[in-house]
Image 1 (cartoon, one colour):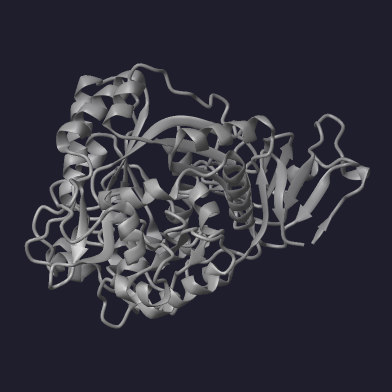
Image 2 (tube, one colour):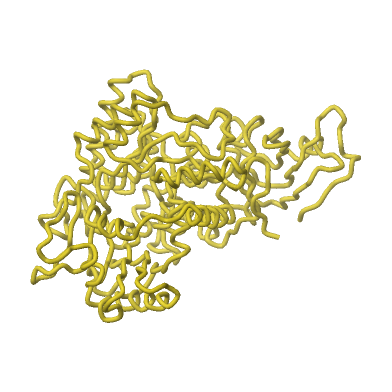
Length: 546
């Protein structure tokens, strides 16, 4: 229930609040006072946290009073690894998530083609061969049957492979004789013919033909995606890998006051960009209230496990002879780390396989030793498969493990088949990372996964799918407590973006970014039924479920 109290409850020697919350279950993330029932906000700042009696002092004639009736309130949830602009794009193309077969995917693509102009590419994303009956990659012949002339490009759910038809292959100049590019693969059938599936760097030719979007399209997509994000309780995102054009649009939207949530941007980079950034000073969010900041750069060490592109120390258990793809060399990773560290930039590197993770940690060690007093906060994005000897290095090198809980529950049906029983013990190992003393931060990688952070909380505390399987959780020793799960979406996310002294905790003086749920949070399947009641960013209500 939402309502207002009269002026009679106002204590004159206390400045009134703009909005107060009372009667709730507050997870403060403040170790000195981890729970509270009420909170007061003035402007964009938290001015009081505690019991209901304390907070009533801040109620004036114009104060809005939100009676939580036991509902949970936390610091604003942050997705620390996502693609907000990518979500905006996905909202405007064919969604193939969950399609049961290649034929079903092609048919769904065909249904969308009628709205396109002549010659326009049909694009989509979300297919996953691991959920298909034969678990095999698709063939271009399935698309050719429905699209004999119009080019089609359908990206795999993880974004590390694209399935195209013969018309598209002809346009981009790929045939049976085309050599695999370094860092990529052109999949071929038993007769040596290109199947139409292009992995990692091999996708670049398709992307080049699709062209660049207009500035207006970028604006439209960002705003659509931001609206979805705030409706699901997110107050901030770490935008992983954006182009100069997208950076410019984000900056303009922030300057216009049109961004409804905070965006911590990572430049989509390579070794050349990393060396160039070494000559510049990064931006900083000194008071934690900026809506757009570019502080880091995102690189890729390898591909993805689902498409067998993750770089492994030993060959894939289900694909003998294959150890995955290297997108950046160990030499380039080291040079990039040294360059950006000297200038004060944060480096985030995508690393899935144990070989890739080791190479990234080696590069980070070199940068740390060269800058022993610097507060680098370098990040490994995903850190999915780790060798036993590399696990302690995160804490020793003060490296942040940026992991995505829903990746584990999405991948668990097939992940062990990829790496075998021994290596799986170091995969998706959140508990091991946390217990080692390292910083662990969480995200979703949307639109690879669903946007809702409640799904991430559920995966983190149960390691089960939506049906509650497997019983007890997959590799249950890696489960987190509810407060630990909330922390990696709030307090730790603030640390990962250098604003832990202003955000991520319900404490006086901190920025009033808040997420309010429609019930008490519990570490069980109840999280899947939970919805967002309100989302506040800087003290402003950005979403409210009436």
